[in-house]
Image (cartoon, rainbow, N blue to C red; front, side, top):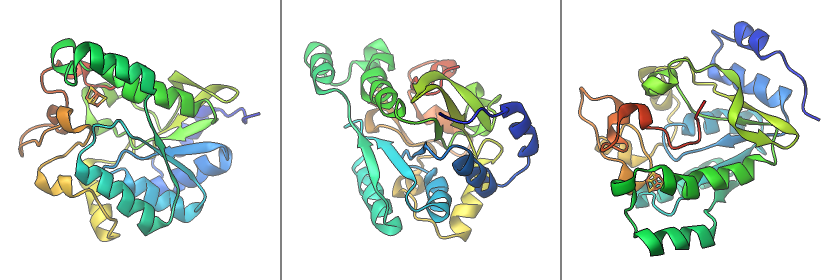
Length: 236
Ligand code: SF4
């Protein structure tokens, strides 16, 4: 059974803690936890976590629509850190039905929810059902919908192995600038798309570079409202 933990007390205790200390606490408190890696700057968490426990369970969503650079980067990370990365794939039958019925770019017409539901949400739901907690690279400065993010919070979207699932956001308080200072200082490998103006990286058809005065989420699902720019993995 997962431990019963007072999340409010934990949040209060670690509110100013460094990501490494939050990770260490999380991995000790919930040994059955998984680390989510998106192929973007959350590689910083993978860098830290693999040093605390080289056997940390790591997964990434292989939507089938990532940039070639992201696939190459995932492979580079696997080799650099000598870790196993579970690649979560969509259900073949549901995916085949979607693309046969609606084509390969239905999200430009219908919105991204249906495609993200099949390529991201459902594989994630299946995978997380085997864990008590999961670790994400979410930050408060990423989007309007993430401003209230807690470091430790109950996951309102997915269930875990024994029922409730805990979501841990060690970078909640970290700004994009601070994160990149750490990545450069520690010489952590990063996705080359970042050097081509991609502040946020997702699927190739739904991500584009942003300019210096644009918020990073403006490069995602740019044809939709800002408040709708979540892929369904982090809804409250
Ligand atoms: S980001 Fe775009 S391509 Fe990727 S799963 Fe969502 S809608 Fe589909």
